[in-house]
Image (tube, rainbow, N blue to C red; front, side, top):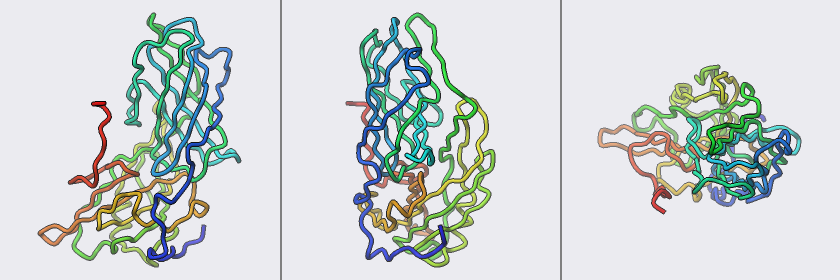
Length: 298
C-alpha cells in the first residue's frame, strides 16, 4: 500500500455506512466432530467497530457441562487475514466478553456463546476453526483439546497520550492509517503512516504512538511479534463513533485493523487532553464520551 493522502473529510461518509460483514453465517470446524463433547450448530459473525461472533452449540456428550471455552481462528476465503475470537463462560485476561451458562447444560441441550475481537475484519471470513477447546463437566473432569503455543492474540494495554500544548495535535477530523510494529513484549518499535488526511502528521503524535503498549500472548504464555494496522482518528467534537466521517473504503484497508479514536478536549491550562477509544470501548479516558450500556442488570 503506497503512502498518500486520503480523500477530504467533506467527501466522506459516516462510519455507519461501512458494511464490513453484516451478520453472515460462517462455518466453523472442529478437529474431530465425533470425539468432541459439543457440536457447533451455527455461527454468525458481524464486523463493524469490532468483530463479534455468536455460536450456538449442542452438548453431544453423556455428561452435564458446567463451562465451555473456545478459541476460534477465522480466515478469509484465501486462508489469510486471521481474526482470533475467544468464546467462553469464564473470564480470560485478553477478553472482557463472557457469557455464563444460565444453568448446567444437560446432554442433548443447546446453548449460546458470544465472543468479540477488538480487530475489525474488512470482509466476512470464509471459515473458522476451533484451535482450542476446554470443557468442564459436572463430575469435576475436563476435556481439553487443541494447540496452545500457536494461538496468538494482541490486545491494547496502554494507548494513552500525554497532555500536549494547544495546536500540537492535528485539527478535528484528521485521520491516518498507520502501521505499528511490535516486539515480543508488545512494545512499539516503529510507527509508519501509510495514508493520511495530512501529508505530514505532526511528529509529536507519531512519537506519542511509539510509546503505546500492547499485550501480546498466546493462550499458554508464548510470545508474539508482529504488525498491527490501525485507523487513527482525531475527534474534537465528540461525535458519536458511527456518525464520525470515515474516508476509507473497506477494499483500501488491511484486514484486520484496529479502529482508534483520539478524543481531544482543551483544558483551562491551555493543554489538550486525550481520551483513547478502540472501537466503542474506552482504553484510557478522563470523562465519558457517550453512554455505555450495562447489561448486567437485565
